[in-house]
Image (spheres, rainbow, N blue to C red):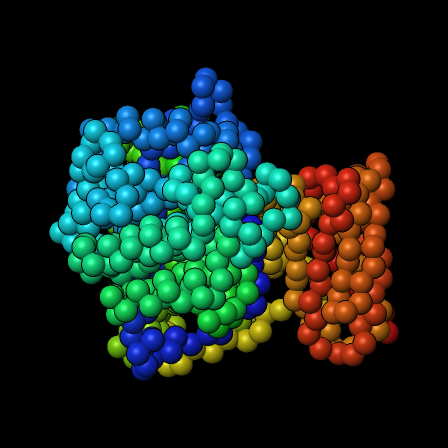
Length: 597
């Protein structure tokens, strides 16, 4: 997997789903409906389980992810080939894997046909380094999975590492071990090789191995719905064009943005962006996106990785992604025998039980029309001329009243998805109020469905000055801009006082939008639960910024972050960016602004 993809996020609020009018929209229509898929990383690396010669490999790319063990441990080609020759996953059952995806509520499945180790999980005429000819198992895994998915109506997609190949001579190898600034796309294909057996001509590798294998995958396994490229080390536009031409073999296929350069728009950007191991702060303007996420910390199996996400976390990540207009691709890493680890299976089953009740709030759902909500997330569906809003409540109200800020539309009906209980509604100023039971029907995410009468009408609920001139920017109104494989700051809505927690990565920044009716100078204060003592922040409003030191000994509570000008009345964005030197974990409840004319 590509460990460096970062977001370029812009708000997706007030988005009306477009009608399926043109050929591109028709091709993507099914993908935009299903919203939830299964990713599977599986190969000879699964046999090693994250260990090489008795040593745990926890350093390197992705903090030692299992599928990168050949690279991270610098395993010679011949030694890894011996591992592959022993790959005999006799407990593999394609129907079991597809059935688990179905029970989880996942409508499509993407499988790693060849990862960067170069071992094909299908029979190939151009290389016997594959599971049929080069391992005792002798069965075509791709064929069995394709058939199992077809039997259940699950869309089938293929991952293929087109450039990186650490076994076939001439294949590319990432140079991150030697150069921390090495690019994940383009560059010198052979710069990261570590074994003379890997040396060869990159163009010859593409011509003789990669291109023919992609052709095999697109012609031998029936309809292929998605093709998932990865890590385009050494790729040029000419190389990418040769692969793109092969896609004509499957005219309706959907592709991601990793054929040439995922970080810059280009002629080979495909259909979908691929945020990896993080959820964008907002939607991605003008682009479909698919968040790919692991259930623990690794993609390929690691025996000692027990950092499993809870069902609550996975459900909320699914909801968060869909509320921003994206798809959620959740990965599993079976072991070397073909077994899905029990903790992984248990978590997917739990997500599936939630989906049994709440799938209509995910399937065919679109981005939330609200900028932020104090208690969770919202998704939207338009059906038979009616608009439905699904309120995904993470923080259930203790007083029995759920506010929907700025919702001015008339509510024709409100009810719980769990049990179907109808709910009464009321109004308070510009807000709708939903009168709910005192106890949440679901401990993780409860869903309230609103059927609206007439068109959707929402007033802005951006923070603005109170009568005393103060503007409160609470944690729940922040956008959290995390990065791939960094520490993930989270909005904790479960605590007595909601706050941004686990802000450990200095490359994570926060932003708030707010309104001011006057120009002037804004005085900024932070309400810390845990202050990053002796650290520095850059505070910005628009193009104006300043660096602020958080002194040692700062105690929880309000502390000043300086002053910045507001040149005019209007809407502004305030950003907090840590400076890397000396950053310490922080917990933040709110910012407070005072505007002085």
